[in-house]
Length: 377
Image 1: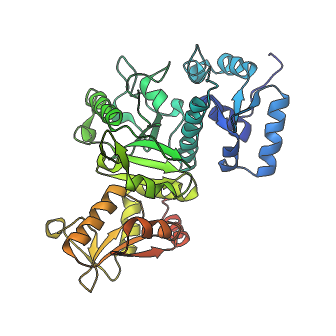
Image 2: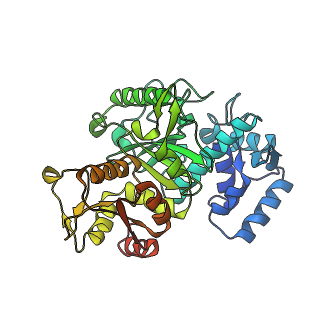
C-alpha cells in the first residue's frame, strides 16, 4: 500500500472516491451529473479501476461503483479523521448489501447527495457541524447553511436506526430559517407510510429541541422536498392512493411539500428555496402587472391578484399542498385562477391543476440569468 497514492485533492478522482464512500454504492449513470468533461471522467474511472481503488457491481439491472478493500484501507490509514466513522465495522456504507431493494435505497440517497453538492450546499461530514452526536452535538448556531445531513448521519453509525425506521426520507436539509425532510422517488411510485413519517418528524423535533441554541427551529415544523427523475411522478403524488380503507396521500402530512427534479432545474430551484432574497427577486419579476395581496385580505392561499378579479399563485417551486389548496379555493369561490410556473413544469402543472385554473409559464433560462446577474448562483 505504501506505493499507492490517493488521488490529488479537488480533482474528479478525489471527488468520486468521497462520493462512493458516502454512498456505499454510487450509481454509474450518476457520474454524468458530476463536474468535469465526460472524456476526462471516463479515463479517470478506467485508471481508478486499474489501480484497484474502485470496481463496478452490476446485478438486477442496477449498475454501481463501489470501493475496493484496498481503497477503504487506504482512506482509513491516510485520513482516519474523515473516514473512521464511515468505513469502520459492519456499517451500511462499509458493507453495503447486495439485495436490489437495499441497493436502490443507496442509489436514491446518492442522487440526492449529488444534487445537494451541485447546488453548492455543505454535504461532506467534515465540513458540517456535528449536531446529531448521541452525547451532545455542536450548537445549532454553529451550522453553516445550507447543510444537508443524510439519514445515516442523523442516526449515527450502524444500521438505519430508530429515527428513520420505516421512513423513506434520505436525510434532512437545514436552511437558515427552514428545515426540510428530503425524499427521492426516482422514476417510480414511492410506497408512503404516513405513520413512519410522523414518527420521524417527532424524533427530529425532539432532537432539535435538545440542541444547544436551537433558537429559530424550536417552533418550526419540518417541511419536505421530494426529488424525482422527471416531472412524471408529481401527478401520482398529488392524486394519492388508498391505504387501510382511507385516502392516503403525501400531501396530508406536510404543510409545504416541494417537488423538484434531480437535475439542473432542481438545483436552481433548491437554491431559490433556501435563499429568501433569491425567491423575493423571482417573485418581484412575476408581480409586474399584478397586485400583491396582504395576508389579512386573502380569501384563499394565493400570492397576488390580476386586473380582472382573478387570483394568482406562484407555483414554480411545485409546493404540492399549496397548489392543491389554491385549486380547491378557486373551485369553491368560483373565481378565475392562474398558476405561474417554469416552462419545463407547464405540461405537468396543467394536468395537476385541471381545467378550472389557467397556467402561465416563464422561461427557466431567463430566471437563471437574473439569479446569476445578482450573484445568487
